[in-house]
Length: 69
Image (cartoon, rainbow, N blue to C red; front, side, top):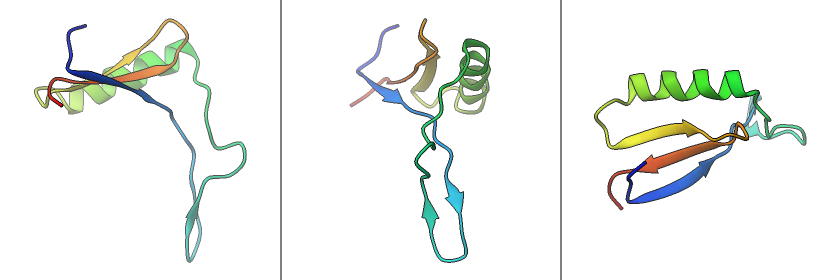
């Protein structure tokens, strides 16, 4: 994977309320490998050609790569 830089992309579940949006205590999600791969494939389909890609690492952690700084 050739890229200019890489970030960890942590999936979260926010709760939208009437006057705010918040991240609950259990809001950081741990994806299965199948879910991480499906999310990365869908992201890459939508953002194809933008210079941004999402990858599922062996641990099901998501990595976002950028072609340019």
